[in-house]
Length: 415
Image 1 (cartoon, helix red, strand yellow):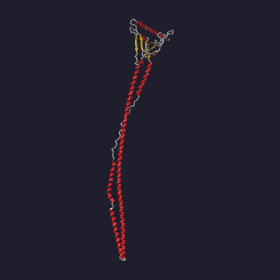
Image 2 (tube, helix red, strand yellow):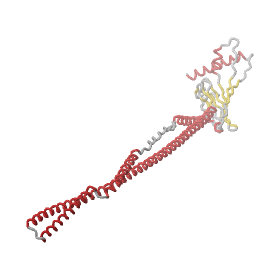
Image 3 (cartoon, helix red, strand yellow):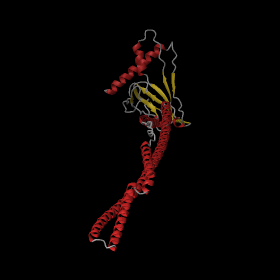
Image 4 (spheres, helix red, strand yellow):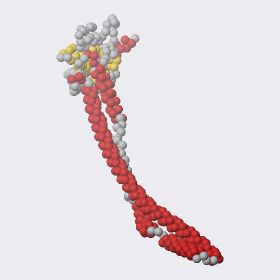
């Protein structure tokens, strides 16, 4: 039943074609109109495949003498479409015999090269995205280092005051020593006078005793009375007692004179010691001043050394910052260069993709016939026929004469 309906449709189509031919035979001379679509040649040798398609159709007659528009539209829709295709490889043909196709379906395309270029395009885009997402850190600008605090002015007032005080004490000690030396080196006048008086008293007492003894001896020689002798002897005892007292007083005065001389000597020695102590204190104060000056010089040397180290560290920091800036600028230039190269590669790939010829079906229908491939100078050419209805089998089971099997370029055609 299905085959019967298809035959009816074909019959209607043939009748319409016959009527249109009979009506317009006298006014129009039938001729073929050819539309040729050539694809652009690819820039690279790899993409040199080109397809050339020639679409042949009978001309559309003008609508005159009351011909129905719907009949012409049916005529144009059911008319078979022949397309001549020229490719570099028969595998570019993407349709088969009796295959149903729709408008826009691919008829011929270099899918292998297109897939390869699509993958290459995706790879290049991925590389571009990775480069754009890659963050190049900018170098951190070092903060300006704070300079070292200046050293306070060198002040040695404490040491200088100690030296001045030591000098004053030394001057006082030396003055006192000079003033007392002559006095202390001689006997104490008071003790000396006391000693001389005691010695004079002792001499007088001794002389009186001697005179009394002579007088008593003389009186004995003169054989004076006993009472007189006793009286004179009593007086002699008294004189001797006074002599003893004078002698004791002389001893005491001498002892006091000696004691005074010893005290004077000790005082003189103490004054000399005081001078030496004052000199020692002055030397200590002077040594403290020298030590303070040396410490100040050492502190200034350390400060200068630290300042030199700080300057050297700051110079190294600036040099490192400059080097990092150069590296950052070089990294940016390298990234921009790589992006430019990748964009060029992407443009090249897109150009190659745009230059790959692709033939699409201009209408809906079925592949009624595919002629055998003919090869000339590395190009293969065939002609396909697209009809509105699929090919049907006759009553004896054979295919319609317009249906052919597509052989390979090296095979013959079988009917």
